[in-house]
Image (cartoon, rainbow, N blue to C red; front, top):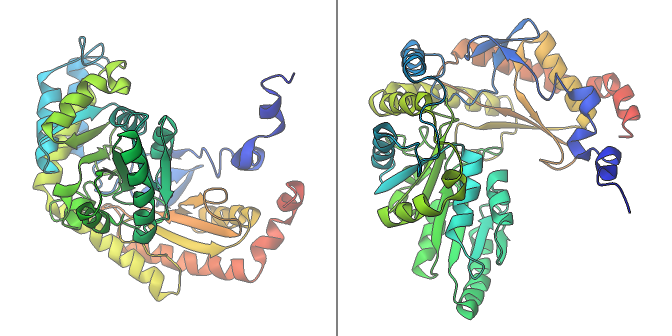
Length: 419
């Protein structure tokens, strides 16, 4: 019999095997200084394109004041205990009412974390007789939530309505046999590619098939739609999303999340959502901070306008210079290049050390082998100068990638890793 740890010691995984070359620089990097368009990395000033602070709230004086006052008044612990037992306050209820109104739902319920909460919502909504149909490119939190499901689940090809309908036909037959229901899951915005989910097409299928729709709108909340209510508002189908989830970790620049739906559904989740029933309540510093952030989302449309000015300038500039940014329809800006993992390391090091540009690098197994994805997150704090400087840097690194410079620089790393 093997020792449980044998596999772990022998096989570090597709990303873990690069730890000795990557850790501290390419993964687990340390950005320092106030959260903003420009920060410090290993002592050098860099333009940061990896911070999900879409609306630039993180370092605003009025935000920091409210956070600080809440921490001074309540500390980091209050309220103690789970919501059901001793961790419930008027402020939690106020935030839930305001969030529900903002996303145009009857009610909402706070979640301590998006990842944990989304998994638990999926688990609470379905039984072993129900069928889940979800987009194959859904976020890891959804995939992990689906893994908890004891019944059948099917994936449909990313944003492909024909594939979805084919799987709905299969799901309908099974649901009729077992007396269950169907839950369809998509994202408002897919965080790697930047594409909006085909929510309008999914909703249209409700005329033909009986199912409920759950949408994870982490990247759409605060950035899309006339009022910032998200991808559903942007596509004119917010009323047809049965269960809407969003996180505070993007536009709200904080910690926490929420689920919104009809009052009856939220009442059920309050008493059956295991990740909240058996976990400490969201601390007051985050609750009061979220109330302030939500108020700014509602009353300062200029933040979203500035964000989109920068998004359009960056994405149009990349396209004009011949870069492949895929089919993004959101703020998320992917740049696709051809190259190996060692070449990607050399490229990113060049960007950071010689051009002062910090952006996230995504490689296999998240995307197919032979591709490099540089994922950029424009924010309201970026300037047109930041964008122009970045475009010039990207043109330079693309030339070096194409002429083999990075392949030569990374040869030793590639040989050591058997690439």
